[in-house]
Length: 251
Image (cartoon, rainbow, N blue to C red; front, side, top):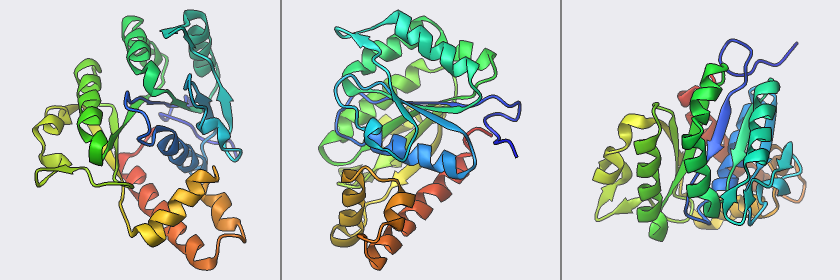
């Protein structure tokens, strides 16, 4: 049976991971997303466009291609054009991971060239994924979320709230209570919480899996992960996938 992709018309969806703050989990969440789509029976292509760290490309269990989009801090228009041609010519869901250093240039290029409208006109549902991270990264990641929300014309933002290392709270307020987040909420399609769990068990297991660049399926099948480690990873995977089900990506 042929795999179903995208919007009910056979066209694949396009998932752009954008965040100008480095080290907040963009590539990890891109990997989670690609795994989820694959396990839903979708045909997935991942593009690693980070000009500094090709973290996503380290996942051998995912179909990842490295694409060098940037030249001296600016988008190489010919290479970007080739990516769009590829996206429009292949019936796949594309997960495109970008780098923190290319955030402004890449997003501005997308806006100036009306790429979102082009993809939509050609039957591709476009999702803009971004990270809001807890701890010291909270203010900057929310600021970048606001920038995306102000400039995207659609309600297409998927916010990954990464509390793996620290909770996304400030002055006693949770993320949804913060004025900075509420200002962007009309453009948010859904939130995915990467939950902060017991750091000696769940946290340690997840960090190990990420460091090993393994998918959930690979890690859970590995004998070097003991039965309780595999159980906890299965719990984390189920929690993430249930949330992604609620966003109905590609529906």
